[in-house]
Image (cartoon, rainbow, N blue to C red; front, side):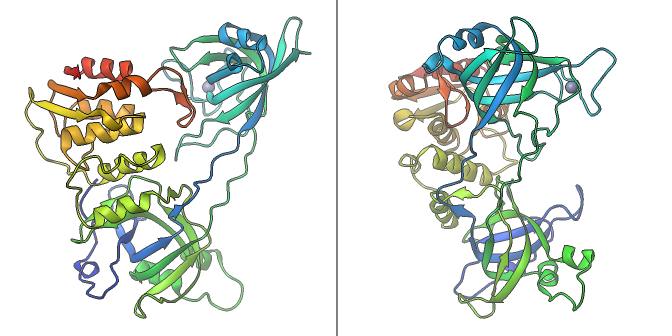
Length: 427
Ligand SMILES: [Zn+2]
């Protein structure tokens, strides 16, 4: 995660003017998987990286057609308008007919790649179905899972006789349906707001993108020259660059002008930028890291969940790889006073193991990975969790409407520590 991308010359760091160039745009694609990363430019400020509020996805309406509901789904139909009509997440697993594998379908242990997950569902209504006697059509309101950078939800239903429905907790059976409405459809690609690279020092590939287009019809090749796709690195006051573990930037150059920050720099406008901009509260975190590593713990305590998550992202970006773990058998102390949400737990456990600004996982998979070693502490170890009453109060069972996922509970975390040989002492 840390270190300089190949191809960054020292020139970028020897910028001796007053304007610190805090961000690097790095092309990680053109050179291929094993090829060099190429710096496109360094800039003082990225207008459009931090926004407030971060746009939320609109909920959608779905219909399960020809449904034989079971379990909580069946129970919800009699209790529409109450909390029992809230289903949490539901997985739709297609039932492919024998000998009719869907083209592009990949089998997994428990299902296939054609399955979709609907999130934070609420049952709105149900009525008898025309698809068969005793079947019902169920109207739902919620979201569809979009797996980042992987695949958008399918626009067309898979070749299937119907769908098995299950809750995302222990494959809880919820029955099945013949068809769906509103799930498989073309979705408009959300507009990405334009971005300005303020106070930019373009390197040769980006300078090429700034050259005026030739007169006459614009060829595809000339247009492609103006496309910019870059991963983002943050540069600290010592000139060390770290890769930011969030989506990069993509857009087409629409113009450039000398920068008001410094006449030797340019401001570059792009017609797009960050498909997932960062919350404005995160700007302070990166400014803090610019001045150096946090020296005291709990600087994240005043942040909300979204910005606490950003704190852990910055901690991950600055985690130093390649150091041996501290030996097994040690005791770490977790300050539990601010663990009012699971994001606060990740901040706190990072600092417990790796000190102020430390990282030790920022989601369950990452925590599991850290507990396997290589992230600062070899297991088994002892974790003294101080002020654990806070987590007992807040990390409780339920549906986490912010993460659109069943809540991560204190008990679940304790079980995970136990599995990895960590003895936790709650105080
Ligand atoms: Zn399939």
